Image (cartoon, helix red, strand yellow):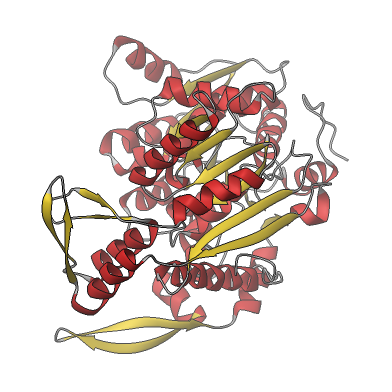
Length: 485
């Protein structure tokens, strides 16, 4: 039995995972979002420090999340009886930041925790500093949301994997290790130990688990992944160095309920959509600014413009946003009339977020809604989150995009989550869902997707479902039969 005094009482599954893995040199915490993997990591760090196995920890997380480690997770869960220095990475050349960076490299009897954003490892400065930190100390090196290093060719992935060998212990944390394909696992596991999966390169790993076909385009021949194989074998390999915990198996959390509200294109949308789809070009006219041309010179641009049309606007070749008559915003307002309590609304485009905020303020009054996306200042982000979680506050609705708000924040005051629009990123979908469905939630959470029939909306949902089913197969789980349809 592990003899350790916790600061915050663990759930049974948290205690069990810690007991089974605390002494492992490398371990993957594949705990579903909301199961408290951050606490397990911090307890693990404390146990190893108490035993003299480490004197420091390096925690790497996405830019939108790493602040929460410093201000939220570490103060909440690391035992107070451990003298700790927490240092947040910043490349800024101020005297204060220089002093903090220098202090991180000094030796003391205190536990030193350096928190860095994963983007820093795309820079020479960040990589060099992390190397100095690792080479001078006994370190547990952890990558939070480890799918950020799933791309073998990315500079940050190469830097982090290269530096991992200098750490005494290594951990990866993610609830969704497979967001696009089983091949996502290779560099995440390579960070832990290149020997774990038994392959000398990404390409040999791909050859074992991916079905490949030779394709020719533009006079060149290349291999294309068309399917996957041997996934049961891969699942068994993961069991040897990972912990997989699902909320439905361990926490008394309410079930998720999925609903879809389908709308149709207006005549104006349909004309624009069909012209873009057939000819990759369309002409629009409004009384204030006259005529506008919209063209799509690539497949990706075409997909983007079609999605915009389904949402009720489009960006012209002159980078002007042109509003189109749409039923989407109207449907959202209809849904809000039916909703009791607080609600989160995720939208893919900044233009839509602004329109949604304006529409809600018009109906529900000033102070009823806050935004959480790239243009929201840090001060307002903190203010809106605080007001949203306060059940007595008049701020009832929070509108944001999953790129900014999908990670690292707690929105358990909401019992309704509305997807005004989706995108193709499964990881951001899953992360954003579990901002509301996590520890602290006491109500059933209803997820409502607004889908425009006969448009790219449906293609996006099919893609998300396919990715989720592949991920479930790799991890030995059932497909999500009750997910968005």
